[in-house]
Length: 283
Image (tube, rainbow, N blue to C red; front, side):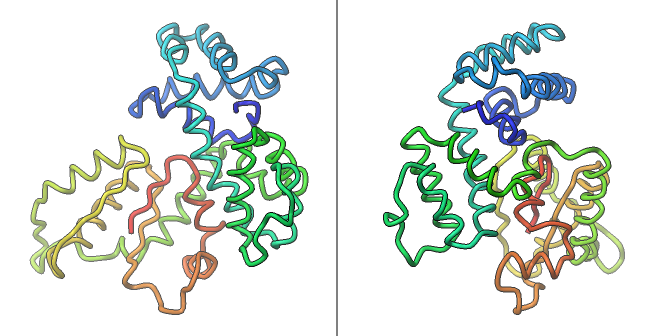
């Protein structure tokens, strides 16, 4: 599976998922640096998953024997599952921008015939079907390579992690898009904030448990929006990129993600913004 190393975000999440979601920045940097070098290593690209894990551990051992040992103990099966979970929505998102005919043209590389695809399917559903078929038949690398060859500009955004300047620019644009919730009142009329234990709990869970969904329930006027507004402000002040939306204030004319991107003035499609590592959605 790691023979498609240009999808850096998926690899990072696959590596850190079974390691430690609270891994220190230095450990993350060491793994990222090793992966950057290994992306051009023919031996690494052609190796199977088990050997790729061993090669990654070998590179990291130079700077941290403890981290290398953790990598060596990773389960190839678990990592493969994590990689698949991260790559699938990327492929579906890319397929949305293609015509049904363009997606169907990739069917042979996935291991199926165009006539096997129901004619009424939409591009995203065709992309998902081809991905699942390619995975089942062991053709995933070939399928993704074909997709990248036909649409290099579409997949380019997933090949490298964003630079610091790009990430800072994205943080600012996400903050602007989050203004409706960020400006929501967080205090009573006399500027008193009622301390809520849920706020600290939510911040801890969002910062330390990647992929966890949290749902706040309560009657109207009990302070749900105020908690989310203050939580968003806290995270942004700590340098965390946040997309915070007051969903019940969105215009009824918004029918899909394209409409939402236009309304929020986002620099890229909504799902692409959320796919950048570290971005936290708060709705």
